[in-house]
Image (cartoon, rainbow, N blue to C red; front, side):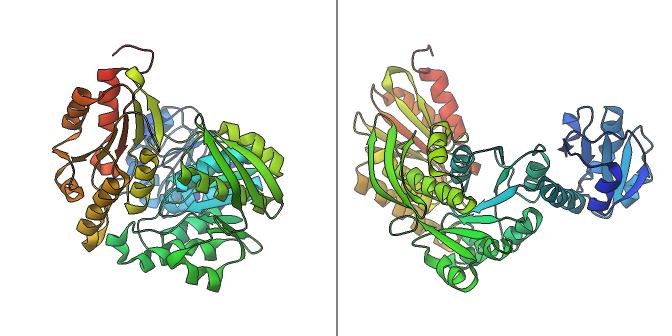
Length: 452
C-alpha cells in the first residue's frame, strides 16, 4: 500500500486533482486496466499509437481508487474516484515512485550489466537480511522499475532493483528515479552493440549508473572491468571489486551434489557459504551479491544463512529433471556472446551421457553478428559438446551439427535421440522463442517421476 494521501500523491506527480474520491490510500499502482482491483491507482500511459487514458473511466467503474491521465483526457472523466491530470502520465508514475522511495527510507540497490543482472538480483535478494523487496520478472524498464518501487510495502528495508538498458541515457533515467545507494555493474560485453556502436559505447551507457549513485554511496564492479575501467577510475564513488584478486573473492570452492561450498574473503572477514548451484558464473554473481551486503553493512553470517534461499527467475539457468534421468537446462531468456560461453562452459561440466546444445540466434550484435555466432560454435566444439542444434536461419552461423527451422522441429529431433543420462542446454535470445522447446520436451518426455 502506498501510504500517501491524495494531495501528497498529486504533489509528488506534479498533477492536478480534477475528481475526488475516498481518502483511503491506494493499494497499488497498475498500468493494465484489465487487471484492476478495488483500491488500485491506474496510470493511463500514452503510447505511440494508443492512449491508456481511454480506459480510465472503466477502471474507476471497476473499483479503482483513482486514475492518472493526460490533461486533455481528464476533462472527459466523471467517475467515482480520484482523477489526476498530468502533462505526462509516465513521468507522473516515475515521480511518484521517487517520492515513495524517499518515504520508505530504504536502502536502494541498482543492478545493471551486460550479463547476469537478473541472477545477481535474485542472489542479492536472498542474501540480504531484513525486509527486502526486489524486481519481479522483467520489471526493469522506465515503466517496470517505478512499478516495482511502488509495490514495496511500508517497512521495506532494502530495495533491489534491476535496471535494463536498450540505449544511451536509459540507465541515467532509471538511476534518477531510484536514487540508488549502491550500484552494481556485473560486466560489460557485446550486448546492444547494434544500438550503441561498440563495446566502449555499451560501457559508457552502463557507466551512467556510476554517476547516478547517491553521494556517499558505493559502486560494485568486477576486478577485471574491461571497457568499463576508464569510467570507474574517473567517476566511481566508494568502490568494491568482486572476483579473482578483488575485495570480495573466492579463497577455495568445491562443488558436490548440486551445491557449491565456497570460502569467501571480504573486507569484513572470511565466511563459508553453501550455494544451491554449481555454475561458475553464478559463483561470480554471488560474489557481487555478497559485495552488496558488505556495502550495506550486512553481517556475513546472516548472508551465509540466506544462501540456502537463492532461487533464480524462470528461463535463467532453470534446471529441470525429465524422465529417464535427462537433465534440461532452460536458459532461454536471453543470449549474447558472454552468457552463451558461460552456459556452454557449464554444459561441459556434465559428465554422464551426451550433451546437447540447442542454440537460437543472438540478437543486437551489429555488423559482427556472423563472427560472434561462428566463435560460439567453435567454442562449443572446443568444449567437446556432443551435438549442437541450431534453430533458425541465423543459427546457421554456429555451423551446427543439425540445423532446424523452429522450436517444434528442435523438440522433435531431441525427443527422438535423447537417452537416459543426457543433458540438454536451451539458449538463445528471447525473440528466438526457445522456451517452446522446453515446454514441448516436458510434454513429450515428462518430468522426473511423472508420466509424459
